[in-house]
Length: 265
Image (tube, rainbow, N blue to C red):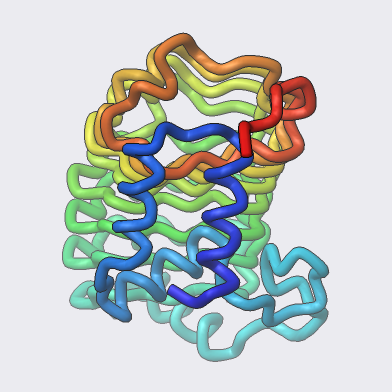
């Protein structure tokens, strides 16, 4: 992990008063060796990669431009039922207003990127993606996470970053999720069912409108990192800082930080 990223971790850990044990755990995690592939996926999903667009916060590639012709061609092949053996499908900027129902025929697919389209729903046939582990849906027009995703038995990473989310149904989140990325949306609350994500490790919720966190979040005993900056939180659930694996929490830009007592020197 590069020095700028380390700096951001350290600034946040000291601003919210993590315990010494959890600070040590955080530093150990930062120093540990992570595969390039996992690091790349995490940085892309979490929005920590260097900005590559005209968006000042580097949220998504919002630069004007035509539809990606390669992705558009893939979407036509998908509609024709020609991609059933794929394991990785990139439909980013494919000009899609709807995902073809033939997506459900891709039983071997492990990674799907449908970012930067105008999607607001997923077809019921999405439930056929029995091998899917990673779903990126950045910069679409979803107002709610589709409940069909809960039926995916191997879903590991889910990103609806920079959509229009105002609601997460109680039956929408697959219990297998370990990385949940919902940065830059309009969420005012999280579903109580988030406590069913027993293996949740990374949770990205920066720049929403969250007023409170559900007590059920404390059931996510594997949680290591949570980004909550730029919300409307005035308090945290009792016992939040006792989560056994929590090593890093970002809380800047919330009312609870503005009224917090400074840490001792």
